[in-house]
Image (cartoon, rainbow, N blue to C red; front, top):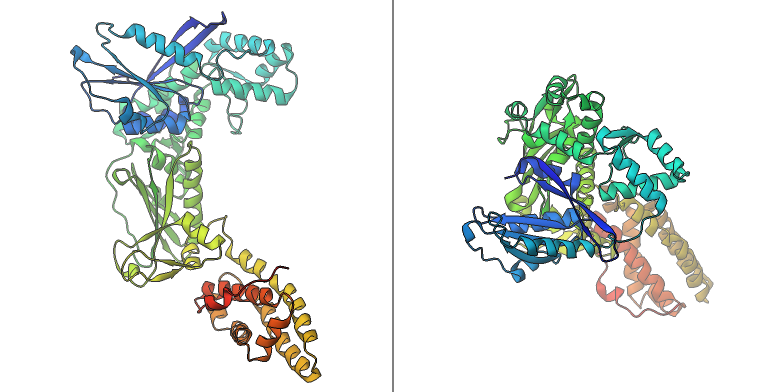
Length: 568
């Protein structure tokens, strides 16, 4: 079993006469290393998954992990049959888990059986990678050669890199950054352009970074302290001459990849979350009136909770309510408990307190940020039902947040719970429990109140349609009262639901809609003879229904809304 990482080089001739150079990165599969996969699993690669007869292999985990980091990169499974004991693995079974699997090759590494076929297949797969064999501009080739010659330095500063570029005809800053980004993707160098503290460093030896990080992860004294280490520990681990001016840079790279965080208010001390204690610490938690939701994954890669802990470490309650699979955060008068349940492929979240909206936003933003860093990760954000049944049971029905958004965006404000007695639930009340920048309920209300401007046209058309002056005058007064009600609603805020529900403005609009529905009333008769009258009526009814459902009032019957519309 590989400890840490081992890197070796290989080359072979391409059909066009060029030489293809390959770097093999053989990394450890132990759990402690899973959080480091983001360092070297890239999209411009060929992946070899080596398995043997001595161990059970979770193919689903490894194939999905490769897909999340490696995109559409091809995969080969190398089946090492020790003592020639066969493993029954079929292409069809595994292709259902990964479309990128090219083939499975049986071998015995002890006797070299199958080695020739492995080499041939690797050559074919590498040669077919999109970027292999593509001519590189001469200027770029020269810069690459100089960078590789400086790999013994491990890193250089940005100013020196820019001088190398200028001396080879790459003068603009934009072109220099484009080239460093391309070389970064190929693993020739590391340049973190989006990180202020690392921007001025060009790592010329990526292997050095990985090996340096693994030295920390593999250190027994740090493991015994549940991931706690200090600058003194680092000085003992990185004691060679090559680390004299590099310790801070390497620490920042570890923080950049969310492998560790600096303890606040503790001088020169850091924590590696993946080495934290397994057991959940005891802490006080207010179980009353909790906001509960969860992230459920089709496949959940390891390391999400560790990265989340790094991103939110400044909010950890008492600085110590944290363990390997969870953390408790605190901000103002709110607390958040975030726990990874890997067996269920989900992250469970509870929020308590009176000022929880901001903390809820932080939790969601950071988890969404981590999820977006993966390639096509599939997950659901699940919100518990708040019907009269679900709020009283320990396992309520959960709605997919995206489905709720879909309902909302299509002006559907009721959704049915899937637990008996199958009550209808207000969509907006569910959405409001979870802050989301993509949904702005107050903005939606404001947009809908723009109907008041078209209502003015409706008012004029209806009054002009009546020949009797007294009838027209009475109708104008009634329409003016409705117009004023629309103006009142325009002032509503997203937290004005109770006020809106009891307001005379909504009551006035509802009575007016009832009159429009009745052909015997003055309003109902007039709306039917006005050009576009039915369209006006239905727009007003739809607007009312949105506000009514938002604040929990009955909606206008569908019979009225389904009346034929005329074309404007």
